[in-house]
Amino acid sequence: MQEISATERLSKRVAGLKPSGIRKFFDIAATMKDVISLGIGEPDFTTPKPILDAGIRSLQNGETHYTSNWGKIELRNAISNNLNRLYQVKYDPTNQIIATVGGSEALYLSFTAILDPGDEVIIPTPCFVSYQAEVIMAGGVAVEIPCRMENQFMVDPADIRKAITERTKAIFIGFPNNPTGAVVTRDVMIEIANIAEEFDLLVVSDELYDRLVYDFEHVCFPALGENIKNRTILIGGFSKDYAMTGWRIGYACGPSDLIQGLVRIHQYTIMSAPTTAQDAALEALLIGDPYVEEMRVEYDRRRKLLVTGLNRLGLATFEPRGAFYAFPNIQASGMDDETFCQKLLEEEHVAVVPGSSFGPGGEGFARACYATSYEQIEEALHRMERFMSRHG
Image: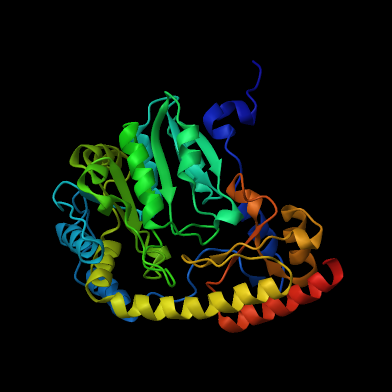
């Protein structure tokens, strides 16, 4: 009997997924010494101590069992209160909020719940590498619309309108943006909301970096009005704002019929988000604001150092107003972004990620993350200056 090839044993959907462009460079960097990483999008801060202590207390108190599929009601109440306090948007904690295994699971649940085979989701790019993959794994089609540096990588509502077809089911938005650090103004968000209403589309809004903004007021999409709230799934979490990446805790909020769909999938695939992480997340919402602000101020200090330094080196960088990424144009090096990142890693042991890894519009750019120490950023810029003196 003829053997089945390794590729044939996988579904076409999975076999066709692109490997993560982020992973490639960090697999190489892991084999090298003295590498400064400006690549991995993870806070260098440890989770604040009171939040750590809440997780420890949870374990010591024997909180080692499943919770409700929806998550602990205390946590859902706190999420509801927090969103109302910050953005004046109200969700019923009993049937409009689910605790998930990070924002990543919330994203998976959202697309799996709303998409039928062939349904299209409009996704502004450059964007985090998971978005298109999650749409594809849910059986949908990712329709990418590139954002542009001349527009500060803000999505253009006119591009969304042009991308709509009879198969369009949803618009995805993810701001503050990974990898560009771009934000979107209230006027633009209102235009997107109007388009969603006009064409009767759902919206999935990933607002994981909502508290990490600089000289800008974050616009929470479902807070734009009751009509838009009723067609939006809001994705949030604790990984970035509270430096809790390893805890794997996030949430999704939305109309009860949509969230019930997420819960149906969640109960069969996950059961419930980690109990210890839920207790720590509750503490984060109750006491975490001063720690969030302390981290935000430090990120802002690093942001200014990195953006000023990159521009000084001839790597044109627009001012990011959110998250913790800069997105320099590397054309002055005379290389494409893949070659630039490869050579910079090999020659100067500085790791950044090619912009093309994040979809259309990212070509010719690189993502540099400033979630590392000020001193490390200074040294990275010194090494990049040597690099550009040879190649610029």
